[in-house]
Amino acid sequence: MNSRLAVVKVLSQVTLNGRNLPDAIAHYSDVIDENDRSFIQAMSYGVIRFYPRLQFIAKQLISKPLKTKDQDVLLLILSGLYQLIEMRVPDHAAVSETVKVTKALKKPWSKNLVNAVLRNYQRQAATINNKLDKNAEAKYAHPYWWIKLIKTSWQENDRWQKILNANNINPPMTLRINTRHIERENYLTQLKQLDITASAGKYSADAIYLDKPVPVNVLPLFNEGKVSVQDEAAQLAAVLLNPQKGERILDACAAPGGKTIHLLEQESDIELTALDIEESRLQKIQENLNRTGFKAKLLAANAFEPVSWWDNKMFDRILLDAPCSASGVIRRHPDIKLLRQEHDIAKLVHDQAQILNALWPLLKPGGMLLYATCSVIAEENTLQIQHFLQQQTDAALQPINTDWGLQQAAGKQILPGEGGIDGKNGMDGFFYALIQKQ
Image (cartoon, rainbow, N blue to C red):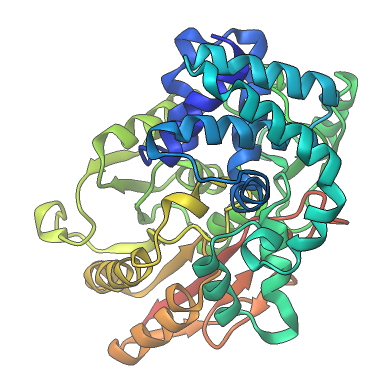
């Protein structure tokens, strides 16, 4: 399949069918030329990342809205604009190759339209760009409800603007190395010998940032299970929970298993149960266990209903990586901007509270529960924990004394890009609260 046509097909799956980007790209994997895969991925992620802005620009150039059945033509135009604005494709090639796709779409009538819109953008770019700052969705490349939600949580020091801008930066590829098997400096040396430029993480002793993403199969020790891909903020969970030898630990909502494996890397002599509601998602955890050589009990069950799966043996520690808006990882999953809806937030907050209250009785007195989300929304984080502490008289919030994150009324918040320099590297947005049972 022509690479630009493939991009339109992928974008259609996301914007019209509500499919997430990885699944949409995988859907066409059999008809995508392997040599085009990186281009298709970069284009698809880029168009979705800047979708509200590209839509605004297109509206300035299209005199009459396209019919619903012709949304593929609009997506083609957006992909052409993205090439002109963000990619290193020569302008003439971006225009001509995009126009050619109208034939593959079997809509020859749109050839002149697509050509005119892209040519007119080239002529009017300065004028149109001056209008971007006057439209919040275009300026920040987020739907308005997202902007309002993040602004409500982070008005102080205009942090909301920094969060929105950080969401639009390409995320780094971050590794977690098993330092029980190899020292970080040693691994950095191995990467350097392969001409892979990398640097040590600032907050996790196991973290390494790559200057440029590489296929995992070229990473030393990846296939042997001594290296994994995981954001630095996510790596802090296992350290905070601090598993001890012989303990019984629950990793709730565990898929895809990055934190599961890291817990076992911290202390392999534990009785670990990894729980997730979808059996298909447990397969990914099993793949990671097979690659790393660790063992854990996997359970496909609903965390809301322990009566259906719990064996009545208390846990020493519980990691609750709660389902959330994923507002802290939009830079990594830009389709969240479009797939998540405003009404989803209230349901997620309700579900988080239900899971917290359902799992709390499973924890031993003196035991620790680590509540984690990849969200920057107060209702899901500090307000959620404050409400929980008011309900549970035997719950005591523990201090998280670290040099990362912003101290909240309850818990600590990492904002997207924290620990990075000039927009490079840095962590995803994460929230952590550590609670002890009295």
